[in-house]
Amino acid sequence: MTELAQPGGAFAERARRALADEHLQGALDTGTLRLYDGRRQGWESLEDVEALRERARQIRTRTIADLDRHLSTFAESVERRGGRVAFCRTPEEANAYVVEVCRRTGASLAVKSKSMVSEEISLNDALERAGVKPLETDLGEYLVQLAGTHPAHIVAPAIDLTREQAARLLSKAEGTALDPDLTTLVSAARRQLRDAFQRADVGISGANFGVAETGSICLVTNEGNGRLVTALPRVHIALMGMERVVPTLDELTVLLRLLARSGTGQPLTVYTTLLTGPRREGEQDGPEELHVVVLDNGRSSLVGGRYQEMLSCIRCGACLNVCPVYRKTGGGAYGPVYSGPMGAVLVPLLAGLERAAALPHASSLCGACTAACPVKIPLHELLLELRRDLVGSGVASRGERLGFRLWSHAWSRPWAYRLSTRLARLGYAFARLTGPGRAWAAGRELPPAELEHWVAREAEVVTEH
Image (tube, rainbow, N blue to C red; front, side, top):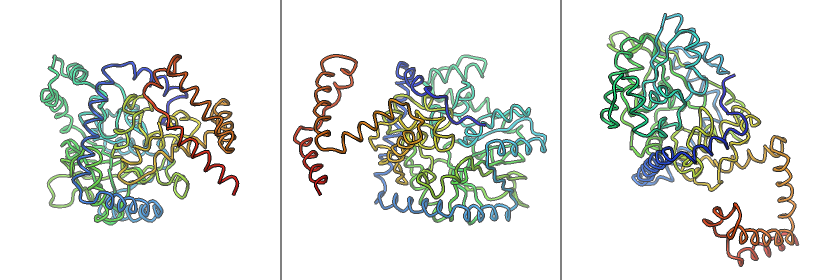
């Protein structure tokens, strides 16, 4: 079973280490602030961003509600144009299919463009066990692979690396010392990867979207490696989560207007590519074979349920960049694949709440993630729902369950509410003077007492009626 989540307690432990790492804190501050500012400016460039977000939300909601039909149409369109589609329920099935394609074609080297699904199913490990060398060619993913770690961000995989750290990794691969200069580092990566593009028999990519009406794979990238991976090798394998289908090209354009702006602030990424089928007669480039692996891995169980809205996610990363928890802990604290608010919701749903019990609590519930989501997924509300599930299922600790019961009991009665808020105010005042809560209290203010009394009076009225 592929590991999406870390063992219980790992989040708190890794978060503490992240907070104590000054270099990591600097890299996270710089990286997330740059992406946050880009998203803000990108949205400001749109005439009516709220109307566009609402339209995008409706597209995603309608598509997920009728997902089986759109996936069937997508598969028919791909195969009509000469491609093959494999629907895989588990990571093991997906890995087995990819490995079999590599074995049949005699591949010993597979070059890869960025794919979070490949991380989700631990494809690199499966390829290595089968004797196929996987090589990441996205610069960030390449650095992460050289470091022997996992992506720390769904858009900027190496967001937690400083230039000095990147220089050390590339210097080791180069066999000579490199200056921590961006142009120097990019040139070194190109030299190291160029030969692999020419030798690889198989190219593996993700899929930002699959277009049902045409059978096209849409790739959204800022580096030319995506096109090299999908055009030069004889075989192209695209990995796609089953929820990433979009019915038509017209609806795709709506999502593309929001995706790049939400992720990096660009109107469009440098390369927005539509790939439709393998190479046809008379064409000079493109693969001889196209395989699309459509992964379920628990997604179908969300359709029609309370958490269906999570399937609308377009993986822009905007929620990560505004989340106060992610911006301090980075992606490594969450687990090996998905991080930030979207990961805190998605991983428990796919891996099982009992195996990722800490993640729903990796949030301040400030709502910034929901406000930043281009398709209006109520992320903070879904996190709250997961917390309720933790308590209801008994996965939460005994102390947490007791705390929720006492809180619910106290705040359902006006007199108990007033007493608890007065005690809390006394505790807050004490914390400002001494104890471990001093640092926490120093940056916070309680609402005015008048507001507390108004809420209590309103609670009395509701109770009486």
